[in-house]
Every structure is written in C-alpha cells, then in structure tokens.
Length: 236
Image (cartoon, rainbow, N blue to C red; front, side, top):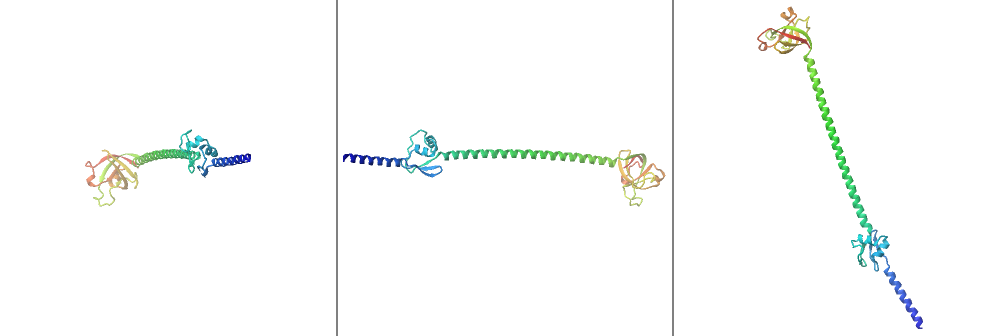
C-alpha cells in the first residue's frame, strides 16, 4: 500500500512540474510585427530565440545595457530589433535622398545659370555685331550719298528765287541743261569748304551762256559777301 501511495505521489509531483514548465515556457504574445508582450516565464533569452535575433540585439533595441541583468515583467512590451533597424535604415535613406535631391537642384541651378550667362553673352555679341553692321551700313550710305562723280571746277553765282518772284524754293540750282539735265543732283563744294547739295531745276542767263557756271538758289541773307566764287562739283 505504501508503495502505491509513493508512486501516486511521484506522479502528482511530475504533473505539477510539467504544468509549471509549460507555464514558464509560454511564448510572449505578438502585438505586431515589431512588438511582443511579456508573459509569465518569458526571458530576454526566450524572446530573442523566438524572434530569431541575439540577446544583445534585443537589449540594444530596447535601450538596455548589453550583457546586463534583463529583468522583465508580465504585460511589459518588448521591442524587436526590426523597428530600430528599420528606423535607422529609413532615416539613412531619407538623408541620402535629400542629399541627392539637393545635389541635383544645385547642379540644375548651376547649369541654368551657365546657360543664361551664355545666352546673355551671345545676345550681347549679336547686338554689338548688329550695331557695327548698322554703323558701317550708315557710314557707307552717307559716303555714297555725298560722294559722286567729279565734274571739275565751276564758276558759282547766287540768286534768291523769291526776289525774282519764283516759288521754286532754295533747293535748286540753275545750270546749262546740256551739261546737267533737270533733276541732276549736284554736290557743290565751295572754295571755303562749304558743301551744298542742290538739284538742277532751271537754267539761267549766266548758266545758259556759260556751260561751266552754276547759279545757286539761296536766300539773300545767306549769300556770301564775295558774290561769285569757284567750286568743285560732283554728280551724286
């Protein structure tokens, strides 16, 4: 009888031990992919083993001293290493992306500034070239309009059409029409350097009788005091 009681007592003790072991080995409850809730009997070692990480990694992820005494209580939340690693990776990626974006923006701004500078330089060069071309063209045009075929030296006299009752104005010159037909434009350079541009519009007594004489229209108050002079004449 005593032997039977002893066997029964041993069986009861074994079952109690097994139940305690089962309770101790209960895994922590998974809250999400990166957090677990501590259950009775959990340790950092068991949690690390279930998560597939080292104890040191688990300690580091929860801000504990590596290799220290890890005291935890049921209901406590433990962070798995994936959260810290993901945050670090995300931060590093964001920093790299921002650096790359800043570098790209700076490069684009530099390229734009260089392009604008080149365009401004090209525009200035084109403007300067146009100005030079226009100046040369104007100079050539002026030279052409005031330089013609030399006709030699002529005797020059003056008259005021208004005094004679004529309305032909002061832009004309009387000439021998066999020498200079009507409408011929003349450049007359007087002996004192004065240049007159006149158009043949009439013939006069003096000019008709002397092919080498021109009678220039001019207001009385502008007629030179010497009255008659010589001039070199060009057809323009």
